[in-house]
Image (cartoon, rainbow, N blue to C red; front, top):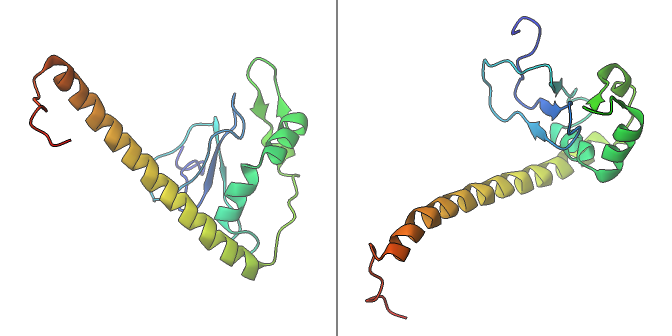
Length: 146
């Protein structure tokens, strides 16, 4: 599969194309030598035309998702994006200097969102570990200041 260009590169956009088309979309943020399955499409943006962050957020727009569902998806039991048709999809893009400004803001938002999600997961794990101990009395909190 690696020879078949199924290994995502840094800043490739990964899109689940089977079932939940355009619900799961990610930017490949680290280089790995792992191939992806055929149910995941790899969009490799030409960075002379479009910034990866811009493409990511364009693909996440509800209007784009609806348009893709209406015009570029086949199958009813397991809807699937038809990539040969999807290649015809067109976006209106701002000039590259504006894309760079917008892309840097979108990147900062995406990184802060990732940090927040990681923190939520850490706090949830801590809660899940402490709650049974608190409920059973294994941890005594009666001496804590209120």
